[in-house]
Length: 79
Image (cartoon, rainbow, N blue to C red; front, side, top):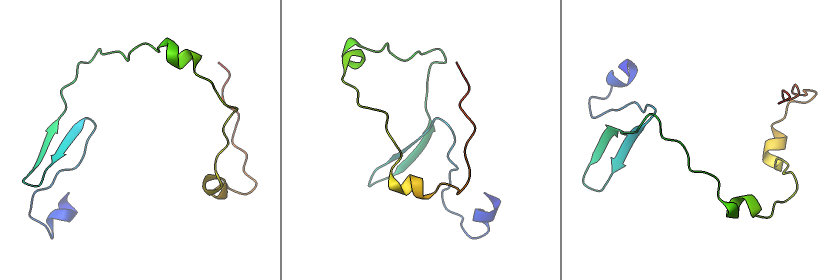
C-alpha cells in the first residue's frame, strides 16, 4: 500500500477474504461480509446424485501445453 500511496492519494482498498465491493455508477462501497461461523453447505440433492456422469475429464490443450517436460507429479495420497 505504501508504494501505491507514493503516487496516488485517492480511495484505496486492498481486498481480503470476505470483503464485499459494491460498484454502481454513483459510488463504490467496500465492506466486510457478515457471516455465521457455523453455517454448513446444503445437503446434496437426489437430482445431483442421479445426474448422468461422463467419463473422466482430461485437461485441455492450453493446460497440457504448460506441463513441464519430463516432470511427473507425485501420486495423490490414498484415502
